Image (cartoon, rainbow, N blue to C red; front, side, top):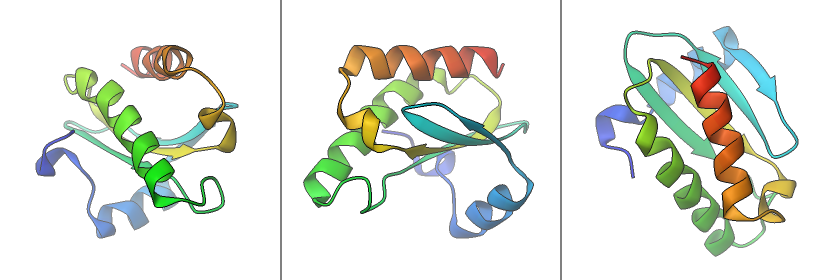
Length: 104
């Protein structure tokens, strides 16, 4: 899990969605803004997973992947899609790692 300082506030969410660059993949979409510090957040909507247990499990998976990249600079919001629930953890991890390595 990320520390509280590395997670986004509600105000940051609003400004990031307006000014951020959006990247889409089959498993997730990312809103990205270059910055001098690292911030990240994961969003899993009810349309994607009905049960809170499933949404929280996906959120924890993505946070566990992202916490290894806190040395990166930038602000990220990961918006998970339904297909993310159908793939293995290794495939999801590889996709997110590839994106984070490119964003450096």
